[in-house]
Length: 422
Image 1 (cartoon, helix red, strand yellow):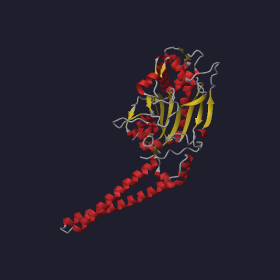
Image 2 (cartoon, one colour):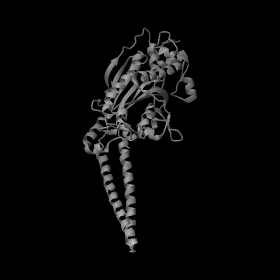
Image 3 (cartoon, one colour):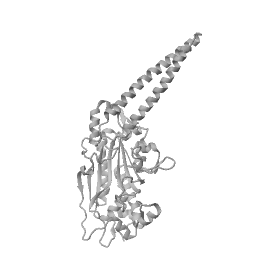
Image 4 (cartoon, helix red, strand yellow):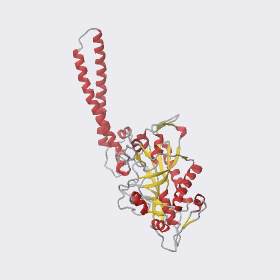
């Protein structure tokens, strides 16, 4: 399967090219349709020759039954056999060329997505909460954690190298508390089903959600051709791969906690200190599978679900609508939640909620069937939330002058009643 509907491109080449321009890419419909037309021509010739081959085979059988000479017919059949084999090779090659072109192109953005080349074109949708005010200079999360002796980068580096973190004591407990707090909220209040997922997946699963082949360098591969998941979006979304889902079973909403593994291949020199950008981190993920007509409504719902965690933790944040140049490869539309970090004096991403439409479903062959219609499902994914960055936000927003950390009220029951980390 491929990500784009070739029939739609044939009928709307100008619209397709305009969508690519909005994505800051050059038009490619002419190249796609040229390959597609060549493939159709080869396929038609192949079908004609296959029909001829079948007809000659019948003639040979009839002639043999009647004792007639079949030498000329067998020569003709051999000639057609070689021509068919050559056309089959051409057809296979053109199929792969077309697939390669289509698989290299990102999803088409929705019309209300701001056009721009990078994050400077993102639009602020809303700001929620007031950043805390301090009568002292707030510290960065890594200073706070190291001063408490509970965030250990030195040991992590000794064990695993750069961009890893060892958590100890009450902050390690906080990671576990946040996992349970988030999962309880999503399952009991918003109807998500909790799923325990594998952290290793096959290449087909990575292809299905768009990590392969284009972004292979961003993930870690094992020696037996499996991949460490960059997010539990991969196994959660692939639950519906090669499935036909009854329309009345939609939407499907699932959530999972997982470790996540990313090579951070393009992050050289960025966030080299601290927990913002590590090779391994933990996250609670939200995934929805729904009818295509319900995708935008589901995106708003999912974003609100992720926001609810920040609100319960009393963290100030803003919602950003990403531009065409900043949103992900598979996305039609993305909202980023950016939490306020006093130590950095800025907002930083803590969740990204994306509508992928039918883009991932096409390559996963994930379909629905109802009484009146059928087709590919729509998929959505979002962080609900990234746990490491939530710890960062709590450390910086709840820090006190003496370096201790208050525990957000909603988290105290999950911390066995602990109200401060000292």
